[in-house]
Length: 151
Picture 1 (tube, helix red, strand yellow):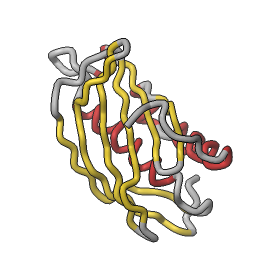
Picture 2 (cartoon, rainbow, N blue to C red):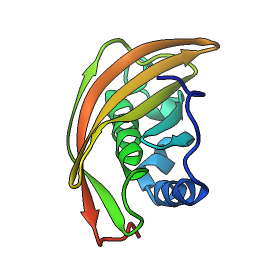
Picture 3 (cartoon, one colour):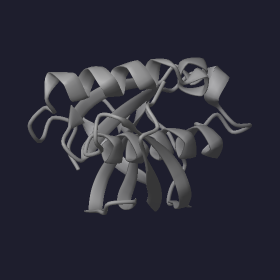
């Protein structure tokens, strides 16, 4: 997955995703930000700083997992009806390498969108200058809560 690939989602969808993301206290606390919103695909960046580190100086697995979960959930949310909301049902993440770099880039992409359940692929990269190294990969299932506005 590429941070610059793909088209943008419709302006209304982007606004709905950004508004929801801004209400997430954890993403704000971590310093994460949305970098790309496309139909079925969302990218989130997390700067590497001491507040998100573990004892060896790498980005903590909890922060790595949190941005992966949000990227996948919002990727699915881009395909949901306007009067719906999203919740994670389950996710599995494999940590492949220490999460190092200037920042982490989490990419969520819909694999299969269903009426109720959606499955997403999760990838997190450590980014240093122009190099990206895969540090985590996973899969997620989310549920579409119809007639439950995301407010």
